[in-house]
Image (cartoon, rainbow, N blue to C red):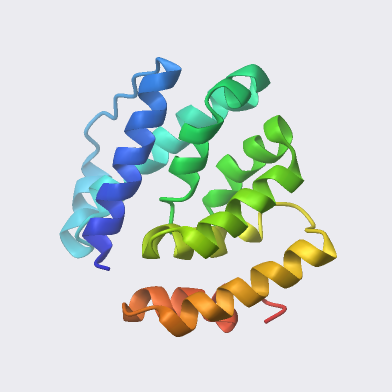
Length: 169
């Protein structure tokens, strides 16, 4: 899966989340961002996504009821975020608003039944879902190995490989 496709999916999921939250995020043009984008194609979109994610996070962190009311849209945004560290923001509000166990179960379901991007993002979000129970962690590791064996896309296969993200391997 190409980086541009992943960024498009992530931005679309964040836009859908922001829409249900009734939030509008405007990112003003920035010369520094434009200069970086010359060397790193897609950086402007990546930068814009960061602003959108933080706006959603700030709103949700202040309003647990909004997390519960829009849990599915928040989860969809989380499962479209392939960055290694940024999933912590939405994972945190989901764990607080819906419970860590529920989040872990949702990530396991995405890994078992989701498409390639959702699987890779579930693996990335797992580390931010608080300490998992022993049984859920065992099931998650088994599902991760199975998904990696079945992954056709090299990027997805690498993300699903246990050595890619999880320091416990």
